[in-house]
Structure formats: C-alpha cells, structure tokens
Amino acid sequence: MKVLLISDNKSDWEIIRRTLRSHYKDIQLVCCINKQETISAVTEDGPFGFFMLDCNTKNIDPTDLGFELLELTGSRPIIFIGYEGVITDRVSQALYTSSEFNDTIYKPLDREDILVELKNKIDGCMQWAKDEEFEQSLEEVEPEDYLPMKLKAFYLYNEFPYDIYLSITQTTYIKIISANKPYTHSTLATYARKNIKMLYIKKDDQLKYLETESIKCIKALNFMEPNHKDIYLLQIRSVTILHQYILALGVSPSVLSLMNAVIANIHKTSRNLINLSDFLQDYPIYYQGIPSKSIITAFIACHLAKKVGWESSLTQSKLIICSLLQDITLPDDDLSKINNTNSPKLKDFKEEDLQAFFNHPNEAAKLSKQFSSYSDIDYIVESQHELPNRKGFPNRPSSSKLTQICAVFNTSQYVAAEIDGESPNNNHYAKIIKTMSKDFATGTFKETLNLLKNSLKVNEKKVS
Image (cartoon, rainbow, N blue to C red; front, top):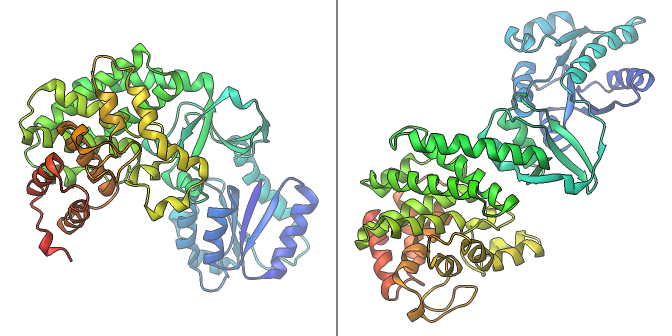
C-alpha cells in the first residue's frame, strides 16, 4: 500500500519514515512538499490508502487541499499533523468529520512518545483500508478468465455490481473497486489521466452483468417518455451495453432484443424533434465516446432523412442501426472523432490502433450482415468514410456508387464526430460545414450538406 505525506518539513519526513519502516514493511511512503507535487502524485503514483497532511505546510490551505484530495480519490482517511492551534484554525469541521478514521497528531514530532502515537493512529487508517479491501495483494490470473470493459463505461454508474480490476501485467491484476461499493467519477479520472483505457471484470460476472443490464435497459426504453430529462442518458447506457454484448458474445437473441428496443426508442424520440439545434443543445456532452457519437449520428441521420422526404420507418431504422454499428470495432473512443486518414491526430496512436481504424468500416460491415432484417446496411456501414471525390477510405468507389442514403449517413457521421463532446454553437457548426464543403461538393452529397446547413441555420460567411 502507498501512503501520501504532504509536508515541507523534511525532518518530520524522516521521523514518519522510520516508524513505517519499523512497523509496516508493506507500506510505501510518498512525500510531497506542496500542492502541485501532491496533485501530480495522486494522479500519477496512486492509489493511496490514506493521507498524512501537515497543516503547518506553507502556501497550502489544508481544508481546500483535503477536499480536493477526496474529490480526486474518493473517501480516504486523513491524519492531520501540526500544532494544536494550527489544526483547529485551518481544518474545517466538515473536512475533519468526513471520515470516522480521520485523526490528529500534534507537533512537535521529535518527542519520546511519538512512535507509539504514530503507530496507533496509522493502525486506525490501516483498519479502514482492510475493511474497504483497499489493500489487496496482487493476483496472478489467467487473462482468458477476464474480459475488458472500456473505462468510460463505468462513468455511467456510481457503484458496480461486480469487482473491477486493473491489469498490472499481462497475468497480474489488482482489484481497484469492490462490488456494490460507491465510487466517484474522480476515481476513474485518476486512471484516465494515466492513459488507462480498459478495466476488467471476471468473464462470468460480465455475462451476468450484460444480461441483467440489457433487460433493465429494454424495460426502460419501452416505458420512458421521449421528453424525459434522462432519455439521452438512457440511450447512451443502452448502446454501451449493446456494444459490449456484441463484442463479447456476437449477435444473440438478447442482442437482437436490445438492438430493436434502442432503434425503436431513438426513432420515437427523433420523431418529436422539431429542431436539430435544440437536440444538440439538450444532448449531454459529458459522456462523449463511441456510444455517444452513435446516438448523435442517428438523430442527425433521422432528421436529414425527413428533410429528404423519407418517412419510412424501415429507412430510418436502417440509418439508426448503421449509426450504432459504425465504430463498434474501434479500440479507442478517440478514434471515433477522426474522419480521414490524413488527420494529424492519428500520430498519437499505436500502429495496431491505426490498423483497426483503417479497417473498421470493413469490420463493422461484417458484423452488420448478422442483422439480416435490415438489407444493405453492410454497404452503408462499409462506405461510412467514403467521399464523392474518391478521397475517403477504405475502398474509394466512384461517386456513382455512393447512393443518396450513403450521402445522408456519411454527412451525419462526419458532423457527429466533430461535435461529440463539444459545446454546441453556431460558429462551430459553420466551421465544420465550411471544411466539409471541400469534399462534399458533388451531387447528392452537396444536396445533403445544404439540407444540414439550412437545418442548423449556418452562415459560412460569418465564421470567426
């Protein structure tokens, strides 16, 4: 276990380090001298079992820093170190009572009874760590017994019904969140800042989770009204489950039931939309990623289909299912925001991720063939990044082979990739459409882009 000490008194560091060395062989002490070092340690060197905060440290506010630590890491005990008057003056009651294991150690530390007192106070924090299962030993595992889940999926919950693991090496995992224990989004953000994209749950647990969650989502999708404030969050959650289900098990009867429920709900919700700008204003940008982009694409495509005059529910359902499947095989959510093979953003990815990006239209098209109730969707999905000037990918067909439904879908996914996670505004829309005009200026693509432009009331001449 790691323990974080924040103090600018290096003599005190040594006193505490000696105590830990003598009585706690498994504790690693990390010392920081100011707030900047502290936040860096929390985001890069954690997780920490508990904190020791010297309230006499210059240039920090113990109360502000204490709450910031809890926000970043979730509930953790804090041992406040300092002269009695300083602790009383600088530590708020709300912070002190944030954990029953919070405690104080009064300075000076170079007194005879300090080792006993330190040990007693640390023992209390250690007990919390054991009760919370924070101090787990690393587990040697068989990787095939675990399945990966994208870290972003866990942002949809405040607690999870199964243990969540982090991969340390290929065969060594550590449990970082216990089943049915509350966790904060800041806990996940700590791992995200370390560029961790995948967490793991046991294979049997994931299958139970997917089955249970899909049933919950289907029920909610069937009964939630289109104007409900949480309708988009429900759709994001449902598409997240759908993607995980397909990647884990393929297209099963449960997947088909969930897919049909999602399609019906998006179709029903999109029918009530009068204005595309209103949808983009109301849509939650916090949950950006592949499921989110899928939903944005579906709504834009349904809107454009109505503008073209396609009122058929089958046609709109085809556009929705293509939206849901387009990026399903991408290994990284950030790749879903890239629209062409010349993007400078591609240099940030590993070679295997780049290959997955270049191939994802073909791979998604293969998956789409399993949804046999919807004819021709494999061609729409395969052509998602194609352009009428043959500058797209992966096949670069002639413009005559790109049908009007391809124009509607490709326009929709392009815009969705550009706006997912972004605060919507007219200037942003205008910049996107101005960029698109270079490659979408032919035939049905140009007509579709003009429909979108009119829907968003974009004036390219006013781009700032």
